Image (cartoon, rainbow, N blue to C red; front, side, top):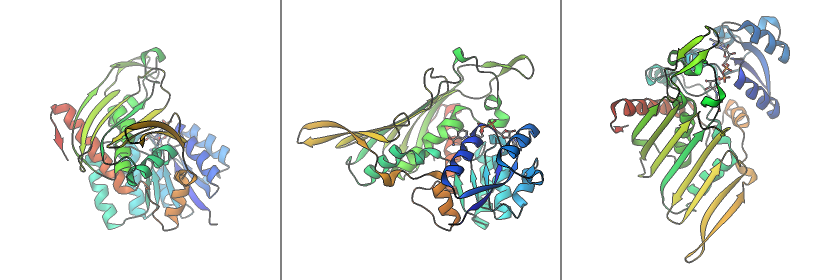
Length: 350
Ligand SMILES: NC(=O)c1ccc[n+]([C@@H]2O[C@H](COP(=O)([O-])OP(=O)(O)OC[C@H]3O[C@@H](n4cnc5c(N)ncnc54)[C@H](O)[C@@H]3O)[C@@H](O)[C@H]2O)c1
């Protein structure tokens, strides 16, 4: 089976996950790496056995490198648009981390480039690959819940809570991150709704809020203002008429990585969570008027991985449910609408 030569840009925390996933898939070899931080470049270069001439501080040189067949972008959000632009211009397939860009304004010119040269792309909406969510989508599509009327999605983390004294990092700096927990975790919730129902957001209202307005910045030794949200809630009507409520925060103390979905149909309810990724709970009518709550194991065919799909994409296929370029673009459009809805305190139509 063909192995793909990868160029990995951004060698921080999440890159370690990508390296682990690539190894587990067994179809990828890392041919070049890039980071602006020399220490990270040397460390990852040695960890991965990358020759010095394939360790780039300028990601454009990695994208241009003929030894690199596909690019994986795992940088902070301020670099996402430039890397996607570089890959589209070079005609190089890529996997890019979310959020798509910082703002919708940054996303628009990328669509024009993509229309001219639609290179294969996977946007890392990783939770499409959580088995319980994929199984939930299958049951919804098969009509097992009847008509779905409403749903709720939450994505809670606790690392930002006051008790943790989390210092100021790039995730609180608007110029680097764009939005706060909204773009970070909210982008996953938006994608989950689009993935589960195959529908677009029609209109929405929203509240963004900053619970902790300043944090200690170790680089300056002073307090720095947090310029982005660390709590976001929104509610939306989907194009099929279903109503959804969404909440996310990084200040839910005790929550590690808690992404959860509840879906309410005319004849059943589903609950799925990252806390129990290989099972889901289905409340259904077993006999007329008799409800039963069953816990189902996710079947093997719903255990698809992001890197298996990426390999398939690089072979010229488009696997069902793969998050592609347009999923990133639309996601950014919805993030932008949420920011506007919160600022104007008005319902925004898409
Ligand atoms: N899909 C997911 O579930 C998921 C989870 C966590 C993070 N992420 C995303 O991954 C991205 C990276 O997050 P992280 O936690 O790894 O951040 P991080 O700060 O730990 O690492 C980012 C790395 O990128 C490097 N970098 C910065 N500018 C660069 C440039 N111009 N060229 C090359 N390298 C550059 C930094 O030096 C750093 O080593 C973010 O966009 C984040 O939203 C996604």
